[in-house]
Image 1 (cartoon, one colour):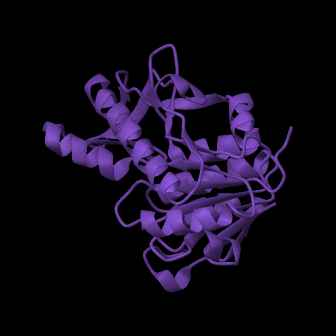
Image 2 (image 1 turned 180 degrees about the vertical axis):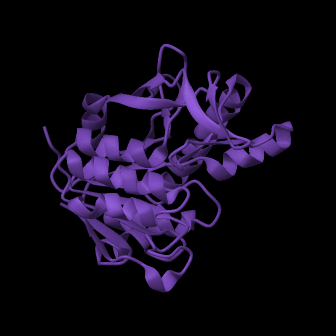
Image 3 (image 1 turned 135 degrees about the horizontal axis):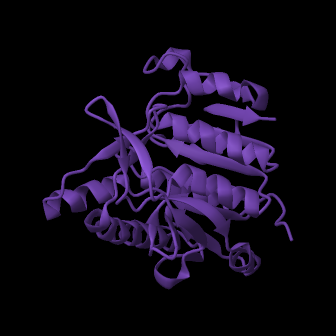
Length: 269
């Protein structure tokens, strides 16, 4: 059963996002409509890797997509980072009066399957990586999330999925799209450390205001780095029936409200 006017918000986990401003805004929005939050872990993950003396590495696919390399030792740090980021966000939302519920530990609401063979560019050559513990999302426990929403509580989800191989690192933007689709949400807002999608990154004057579903393949050509994942997430959410997806600036005051009012890049069918 759908929740009326449900809003899904993805908070980026990298440096630059104004978490306090985002939480202030979410507290005001929650007075008017139900919402669920998916968050990233990049900044905390990088800090834990630094403290542990573990090198931060990325995998670059032949098509240009970048993802964090997560071999077993790094996966263990990733779990710690995801849980720490979740607890931090839940605490911040509760301080602002929201009944936030973190889905970590044994309560992961996403199900995934591990990518056992990843093709990646290594020193200019395509290699097959077999020890990575990242994964694809194959399911969302919509029943427990709907139960939480029906109780007037706010689900807060990390970019992590349960699997037969243990917890998996999954892409946060695509996790948000999966949650939005499973819960039949009205809108997905993805906050980042840029103002939206640029035609000529990093030229902020080249921001794209509107992209329709039929134009998304072209938009992927404009997207650089992590923005490609966000555009893919927008396409996946629209394909599942969402009315709109907005990629917007998370470095400003009232970032979600301003996105809903027209800031950022809007994706529609």
